[in-house]
Length: 102
Image (cartoon, rainbow, N blue to C red; front, side):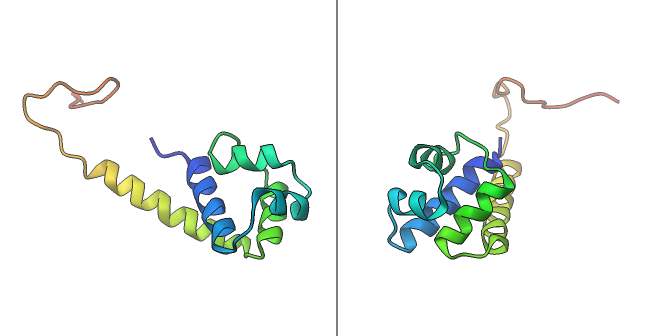
């Protein structure tokens, strides 16, 4: 399953690291708790639009660039899920639909 919050966290972490910033620096700049930013980066918490805007400002990156990068990552992950072949004779994974009758 593709999780937007996980992809967003990965992008935000990459942006932070690319700029050589610590969580503490981003926390101080964005005025958001260090622990909460850490949870967002790990995909454990959803970021509100206001919080995301604060993080983007602290990272000096456009919100549209972050969302575009997340969208691209989600598309790649979705394509990988669709391209996963089903082996003949193999038992389907839990919850996987192999065929349905109309």
